[in-house]
Length: 154
Image 1 (cartoon, rainbow, N blue to C red):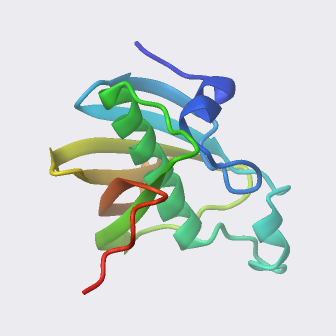
Image 2 (cartoon, one colour):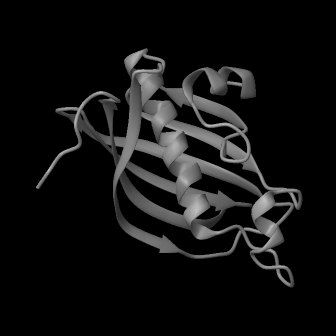
Image 3 (cartoon, one colour):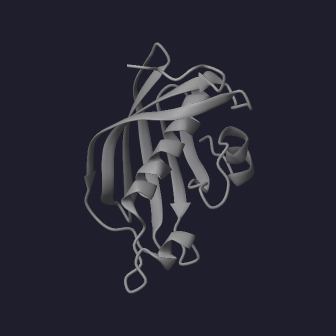
């Protein structure tokens, strides 16, 4: 079993508080899959406004937690770490389905599998659960680009 603590995660993800949404990697297999967790507490800044009378983690942040877990798997698979000259772009979300809200006190467990990696594009099957109940599932796509590389123009 291969695991990563928060200090190791910070070596692979450029995100920092309040946007670092992966607390621990429980297990990962290069080129295959990863399982990670996010401990959701009432102290999260987004609960102040979402919603004061019924705190719920925004769905887009649940997807972001899955995207960060996916990026970790890509970096661990290639053996690379991000640097100041590269950025990982989120380029697609397909089939996102939300099944249950995430509330303070929940432990969000993220499971991500690589579907394919070709020409710099990664595609992942991702799902998040709380207490073995499905919260969200989606196919995610990302790519890494140099910060000096001009954006694609269509």
